Length: 300
Image (cartoon, rainbow, N blue to C red):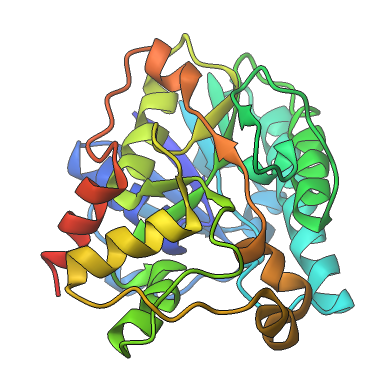
């Protein structure tokens, strides 16, 4: 199989590329810069957007495109940063659409990243793929516009993977979430009752592969473990796995002072359930926060 990955040098994209190569697929990473092509692995090709704009030839015979490109949300949300977060996603979806239209034979599927924030925040409701979109903050607005841009891609099968918080030992949000515990200062944030929909990095990559391979899957797919947890329960599981105390609560006002609008990532949340993936037969390797934390703790 020949698969193109945008954002293929990022946190999730790099691991997806490795997984595709390990099963014998040909991988094309699309990025803004060429990087060091002399160090590429067998079966891996790197091309830039500019090169593809001149000629889409390297993508002929493509089976799938996985679009993970987008500016990181893990930064202070200045007005300039918010514009870059949104526009980078809209631009990537538009470029993918142009690439698909330029090919003599279009790929069978585009798997486009999105976010579970598209459901809005709630402490009471649970959301599956049939739940309505509810825009009530910056991230839900970004996700709604991101999916609307992806919907314009003329493709036989479009999968919009609504990603929760991806947990990996040394990358993504988890190292920052674990740092207070390493300093013996871990505890709930705010009320601790806000929901956290999470997914282990191994399951994240496996689910992306499942979306590529499974022709039954299309439309929105929640990429979150089947058992979301509250912030307090998450912290207790983290502390238990790493043998650290869970005792030092952080008031909401302090988070808002430190991080501004970005603090909504930790103070608000949603309970997303992966009903579509489960109904199609996907099996989570780490379905509970306890199993995920125990695996992360093994690699101390």
